[in-house]
Image 1: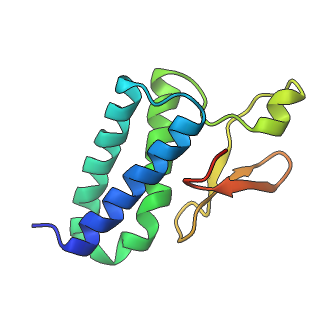
Image 2 (image 1 turned 135 degrees about the horizontal axis):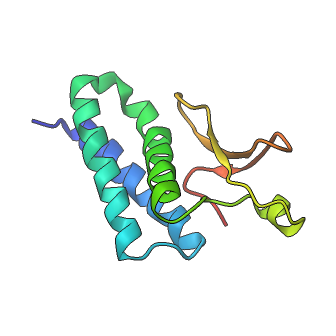
Length: 118
């Protein structure tokens, strides 16, 4: 059974990822289902490693990003590079760590914390 800390971390990750998806107008029903699948998968992962609650936001973000790439294309696009005609997806850094951010790998700049895309 899940602990309250695990459920709180998963609910927070879901809310923050949905906020980023909504900020970029891609939170339709199919995409929300991808988020739910990622959260379900990470619930199992956290039940195996409860100390991983600090890492789950970045992992769910990466899971959703990977699922979107397969189903719909790159997300989220780097806002500054897309304006310059070089659309590429932002990446999540750190890949496994607390306080994940969306980062432009080309310019090596932090765009926003995960959950705060504008």
